[in-house]
Length: 264
Length: 288
Image 1: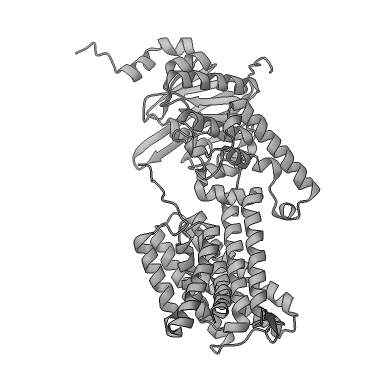
Image 2 (image 1 turned 45 degrees about the vertical axis):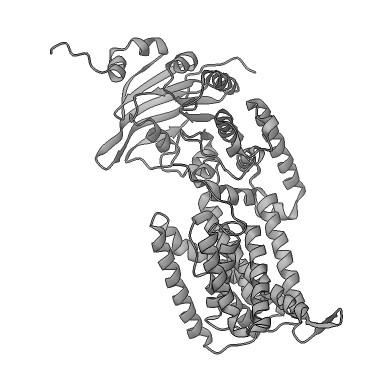
């Protein structure tokens, strides 16, 4: 494993992004950038627009205004699958698995991009196809060992413990060979032990050179892992900076604790 | 007599099974019943007929019919259903019925209403199985059905594209995030399901003849079989199709041939009342 090499290159740039649902501005003129190899945390109160932001970045919903760039490529109007091809992968706040597939099969789907999955070679079982298949399966094995799911590879993903289901989701995301991994509240509902284990996993993933953008509520996790934090509230950026800066910032304290009224 | 009816039933059941596959595959990715599937069955048979009139050999005509069916299903999805992706499912059902009516009448306009027989190189020969004479074309239908089922099973479970179809049926959004183009998966599903449905129409063409409304009852039977097998369950659809064919054939042979269609409808009613998830379906506990 390489020692973490923080860079100044922006892997993801969000510029002036807005999205309204009815009259509610879920994301409002939001701009920030994620630097390569960082673990970048997005925090904010419930309903601040964090998950909407992820849906906008990954092309699940189109923005009203603004731009999303991956390195220098404009990915704003691309479909989810095209964005995945560029190297952006994600997990969901509510785990979304393929309930009728085993862990191995689920992660194998993630290698679809790797092998191209053309029909004719598959039916004819050409040499190139068999080689691709071998590489894909080997890669699934590596990933499952890496996230600690190799022993349960033949079990149905939906029957695993909550913590392990999250691992399956992460493994599936890793199988697409992302450069940027988006994690939407990955430790929500986990016990402290599971949370600790997942935090170690995120560090390991990050050490492999994968940039992580993470939404989290657990301030211990945020402060321990993140190189950079963006705080959003009511769809707007409140402040950003390192953990030390954020913790002491009056606007953050106000957003979380409420305004202390002095002129009562 | 029993063996005789059993063979008839298996032949009929093969056709229902091939039809049921189309309904079930489409249900898998879009969660709606394509009620125009019977017209794909009819369209494929007519294209095979026309190709044959133009002087093509039988195998080429059959292949053309099947490809035309696949194309018809593909276009149906691209031109109509795709535009209604976010509409309520009822609108899709009504659109499907509309497409069915348009296609039936177009076929009547182009080919006329009188039934015509599709040629088969096997139809005039019988084969002796254990002292009983069985039409060679029946054997042909059974063999082709078995081959198609094996190919489909291989495609769905042994290829990554098949896995992608399965993934899309379980969670389409997560599938897209794997870099898989869901539109492509849906198109492929429609094309394969429709190609198989058209094949069913072509296979029965030499026996039950080809006419514009031939897909109405065949479609209903295929739909019944897909419900019996559990919607979305491909192996279930295959087995249920065969079961339905055999049951129908026994009812026709031992009670009265007038009850043939009634049997399918009674089975459909009973299944929907007693076991809506189908014989081979599983109860899905919806999380709230």
